[in-house]
Length: 323
Image (cartoon, rainbow, N blue to C red; front, side, top):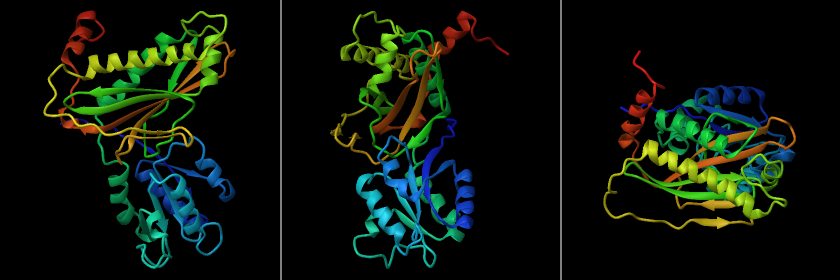
């Protein structure tokens, strides 16, 4: 049996009632959710940033006005329709009786005294419906940090705990996309970053590129090489060279640059990693790289296994030994 990784997901909580806030916080902690709060006047501005989210919690009368949460929820749904919105109501745990056209903005409704029984299964279905082997998640961090450390000089590479997102927002101006195919997965890996910090890294000779004037092709090359290294290590460690089964389908990938949006034709959440590269001399600002995996074409974690040859190589090199 494959050991599952314990992942978290960030959720935005829009709630005015202190008692309900405390109850929602306890639910989030028990459900592997990281709850975030925001001032009512800042909600829409925050949602237009690169905040990676899995869901939204909002009370029906949020903001101190009757039906305030309905208006906020509808506005959020219009700009981030991929995010499930959970509506807290006082008298009922259904969406019945809401104004015409409002119901479609919310994934479900709940009462605070029934939050565990009502939202627990919904969270599992919408955020944690895909299970990820712990060896895969841990291995992705290991090979990704090794690849980034090989492409940058004089930097420290740190990573946050892996998390699940339903957002389709693109981070920064530069991203790479490369397919992953095996008998246990088919999908894509992405790296996303901002252009200017990467320009500083190249200009400060923190990469292997030597140039008098940094151009966009230089930073494209750096991120492309890092992507290729991670992809190669991923294949060597996790993908056996076996013929793929059956006819392989494809779906369109949609990119809207104006709204910084990318869709792979799947409603499944994505596995996300965040790496921060810090210049040890302090001459260049930190560089943040987001890495996302979307297994939109095929996902069979029960078939996952690390390539045995790699483990044998570790024994032969002396890096591993029997206890």
